[in-house]
Every structure is written in C-alpha cells, then in structure tokens.
Length: 243
Length: 257
Image (cartoon, rainbow over all chains, first blue to last red; front, side, top):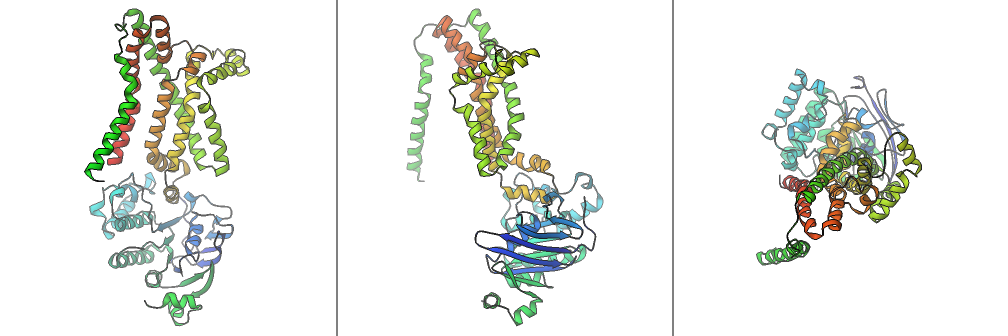
C-alpha cells in the first residue's frame, strides 16, 4: 500500500457546480495540522469534503496530497490514503463490529503484532470491547459512530476527513470522541479536515485554523479567536453568537 | 392493527390462497385410476432426470453470465440502463412458442450460427445442448432483471466506503455488494429456475428430445390421457418446488435474524 511521505501537504481547489450552488474553494493543509470547515447548512462544506475524498467528482480544480494527485484525473478510491467519516458511518451490516474495524486491513498485515496492538488500542479507548462480536446492524447510532471512527483509523490514514461525525450525539460522547481524535492526530500525525455547523465542536476538534464558507466560497479564514473577534459577514456573526 | 383487523386480513389472505390453489383440486377429479406402470414410469423418471440435470446446467450458465451483466447494468446511467432493460425484456415478452421457433431458425442447421456449430459437432436441435440453450434464453432475462434490482438495493455509500478502505472494485463486489445482495440474487435465481424448469412452448420446438418434464406431460397426455398426467404432475411439483421454496425460507430467516 502506498502512503505519501510524512510531509505530505494537501493542496486542493474544488470547483463543483451543483443545481443550487456553485462551489469554488481552495485549501492548503500541512501534514499533521487540522482545519475546521465552518458555515451554515448548504454552504458547500460537505461537497468540498466529498470531492477531496472522491465520493463526488469535482467539475474542475485539483486535489493533491504530497506527490499523489487525486484529481485530475480522478484517482480510484482504493488508491486514496484517506479516512472519511460521515454522520452515517456506513458500517457493513452483514459483518460484526470486529470485522468492520478490521475490514480495511490487508490480510498480510492482519497478523502483524503492531497492527493487532493498534486495533486493541482503538477497541479499548473507544470502549468497543462489549460490542466486539455484535452484528453491526444491531448497535445504536452512537456506538456505530465509534465503530466508524475505529474502522477509519485502523489503517492510520495520513488524511482524515470528518463530515459532521458527531451530529445527534450526546455531549459526553462528543467530548470523548473529540478528545480521542485530537490525541491520535497528535500521536499519529495525520492531517484532519472537519466539517460542522457547530462552532464549539469544530473549535475543540480543530483548534488551529478555521475556514468559513458561504454560498460555496470562502468568506474568512484564520484563527478561531479572530473569527469570534471580527466575523467577516453578518451571517457568520449570527452563526457564532451564543444561543 | 387491532386483533379483529388482523383476523380479517388473515381470512382475506386465506381466501386468496384457496382461489390460487383451486385448480389443484383437479388432481382429485374422477378420471379413472392413475397410470404409473413401467411404460409411464420409465420415461417419466427419465424426464425428471433430464429436467433437473439440464435446468441445473442452465442455471449455472445463467448465474455465470447474468451476474456480471447485472452488475454492469446496475452501474449504468439511466439512458444506457433503459436500453439494456429493453434488451432483457425482449425474450421474456415473446410468447414461448415464438421464441422456440426463432431459436430453431437461428441455431438450427439452416441458420448461420447453427451450421457453424454443427461443423464442430454441436447440434442445436433435439439435443441436450439445445435444451440448455433454450432454458438459458428463457430464464436469463428474469435472473438479470432481478439481479439488477438486488444490486440497486445495496447503498452506494457502502461500496464507496469499502473502496476508501483500500479495497479494489473486484474485492468490493465480493465482500460488500455480493453479500448484501445475495438474498435478492437468490430470489432472482429461484424465479429463473421456476420459469426454466416449467418451460414447454419453446422447448417443445427446440428440444422435443431429450424430453424434460413439461414435454413428457404433453407426451403422456397424448399417448395415455389424463391418468398418466396426474402422477407426473405430482412428481413435477415435488422436484421443482423445493429449491425456490428453500430460497424463500432462507430469505425469511435472514429478515428475522
């Protein structure tokens, strides 16, 4: 399996024409850094993430991770070293929790001691032990989100994309998952782009940098403190205001 | 639904089932003693062997060719997909007798392909090959259309997730698409089986010999009358029903698992 070098920087310009919105967003992200993509619903955040992952194909622009060109031409999904987690984690219902988490591990690596320890670490940190043999179709939404996170991280991808992965979960679980993600992003050194429409969640998950989208374009980017101090648009001011 | 309504629905369903099975009361019609002597039994059992063995071969061919075709059609865009579906509907829509005539003309000794095949010793009329080929033509459309629907039911995001986890398209098909669509595929196969094993109109034209069960029923009717038809009819139900029924039992179990 090919993983880009340790200093793989993400460079992307996503041009995507949707029926209701034209998206044109350029992003750069250093290896090991995180970026919170913030904005109201329908601003084009998920489209940007899906285009980087390859779930959707952009109409123009480029996506590059280090020397690996994702687009154009479109690199097949199985060659993209990307972890992608959405609100609906897309677990394989015909497999158990354990089988879901080990799903992307090549057979020759599945008996590797380091790999086994890493899977056990994920299991213990995300409290998946009691569910380990349970069918994925029978676990709750919150449990499924934890399994999805473990499955995504099992392969230690250098780039992690999170599309509102905590929507609808209780605060304790959200805090627990964010802490785990932040810890592993530091220890494993993966880059992370997260999308959410809750600024609090995103700030905790990606404290380094925020990019704000409105109507498919970037309206402001920088440190979170700057965003709060001087929001660039009335819409952003409203989104950042406490309830 | 209240209990009263449930009973009302159950009574309605029972009446429907009775109406559906009513023709089978004719098995008890007064037609004289059933004939199952050696002159009836021998050809009848031979036709059972022919039907089971050759329909089994036809199913293997249908699955081997039909599954990848269905996987391709399921991924086509709307316009191309409609074209393929029209192609698959043609042999289904055609009256079986007409299909048999067309197959005989196309693959018989006077057709271009038939003459070419005969050159290699493959006889496409009144042969086991003709029997299997006819059943493949008869059952293929049913299987592929059912398989396309089964593949459609697999959420595309699961296939994309599997690919993002590093699986090649072939492995995604084997590890995600196939397991998640297997019940739909099994139902499609059972429908193709039912259609092929009971086929008479096309087979009687292309492969009167070797006689399968439907043709033997016709032969018995012509040669001995109804008393020789009824026992073979029972044998037909006994050997043709278990496979599709088993598929539905498995589907039911899976749903309640």
